[in-house]
Amino acid sequence: MKQLPVVDLEAITRELAESGMRVKVLWQEGGSLAFVARGREYRSEFHINASDEVTYMIKGRMDLHYRTPDGKEEIAVLHAGSTNWMPPGVPHSPRFPPDAFALIVERERQAGEIDKFHWYCQSCGTFLHEETFVVSDYRADPVSQAYRRFFDNEQARTCKTCGTVMPNAMAAPQTAS
Image (tube, helix red, strand yellow):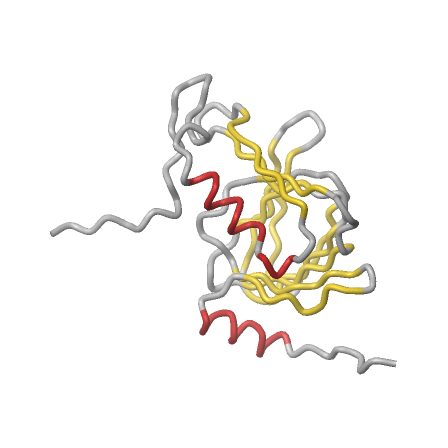
């Protein structure tokens, strides 16, 4: 039998903070996936996957946005030490700052299973864009990949209903000379 994993969550949060990395996969095997995520201040999409998820807030606060079956956006607030369960297929958007950390436990993706990332207009709520991935290895950080593809595409960020262009949240901030 393999050595059972024992993880020091405090050490992992320090490692992520010091390295600037956003995700540290703890394990991804035996049908189980666990990782620690550091907040992304620019997160705005809704992630949809076929697995349920358990989130434990290690440090800080998360505003967990989610969409109800009728498309209404709701928010569940998680503080350090709290946890929640997200059913499969629920569009959700974990929004928390870079100095906050969460432990996420999910079912490992099945072969060919597709994760979706949806964006909605910040002005009128119209669906803007979808990015899809087959996530065979979560260490590839599919969230960052989806963000790069979305924010690098101004047409995807432009609302067909009201014309609002979602700002490129990943662009380098402009400084005055």
